Length: 304
Ligand SMILES: [Zn+2]
Image 1 (tube, rainbow, N blue to C red):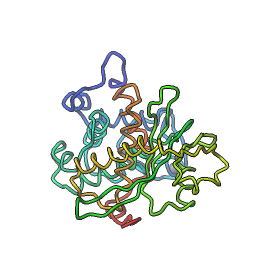
Image 2: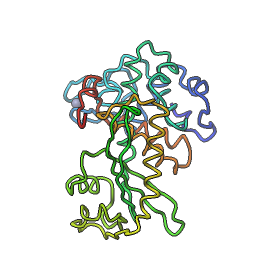
Image 3: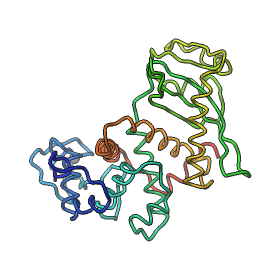
Image 4: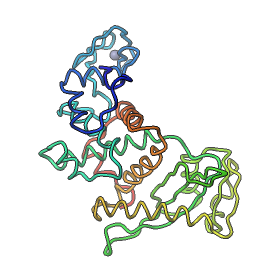
């Protein structure tokens, strides 16, 4: 199914238009098959290839005999829901600004279970982190601040953030944020290795300079006046406001990183040309990632 990719057809602007395009399960299956295996079927267990494989619900590998479906070893692994529901959810996340709660998704797809909606969103946030895999580079500001989780009675969580500065205009480029337990050199190094390309120039406030001074990979410029603070404080504050507006204090510390990943993804893909590009970027990550179960997601205790 190539209709959605064909230049003559514009990318659907509404959920109704989108669902009309993927009106049957066969249409969704063909579309996903071509997206996942554009050069022919590849067995996810043994890499056996079959170029002329027709898209079918289940394919049995001619080499190892494993049965594979379009959702095997993806974020959608083991789903009992129709493919159109997953595709609609991905379209919705890629095509609407801001963010959404599990209740919003439950309403959109008419899901009977809140838990299903919540799990889907958490899995798709994991896909967003995979899709948003380019590090910050060039001139990169670094800053740490705390946010309040759970309203006035809640507790503070420390965030480490990086923001690319696009020179000479000085506008903000890519951003990256992580929830961290402390500001030790280990934590800062781990963050930098993951999120800032080697060779970048780091602009750091005095308070952080000590923790990055051993980093040979970067040219570190100490920002004695803490001008760095203004920009990244604003980014971290925006995240805090966004989180409380959409999730109303309902996010616990152990899941905080997934929400940071969604916020950074949304900010970084705003530089892409259109919603269709964002849809395909997110869908590729969905198809490339192994799923985690609800139990697995809720058992992920990092800081709580
Ligand atoms: Zn195989």
